Image (cartoon, rainbow, N blue to C red; front, side):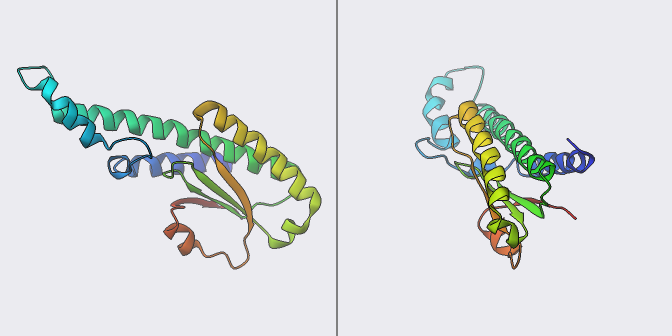
Length: 171
């Protein structure tokens, strides 16, 4: 990683730490929320057992947050690899935006609009994107939705409203 990504990585780690509470309220399709699972296990902990509902909830939330952190770090690394690949091929990246809390995480990489019409850029960039998407799927059996958009007239506030809560901009 270059120096920019090292400072970006620290920023991303700080972002993850400040969003630990999101795991408690986000439900994943086909899974029950933690409190429902904990309630079902409460019966087993009633008669003088070692752990209670609160500790079970805490353990389950901690486990979910650790899984989210692992996925999020991998998304950040894979995004960095795509951006590095784009730059090494002589193209500029303006910013990237991530929604790590979606069931299938999403990443948008923003470039100058004119690059979207450059066949060499499109071929080079999407070849790398498809490669990292396969890596993510192999690791987590989830889709990583990653794409490229033009940065002209991009509305950051709308992106944030759509769940892209973490982003980095480049000069």
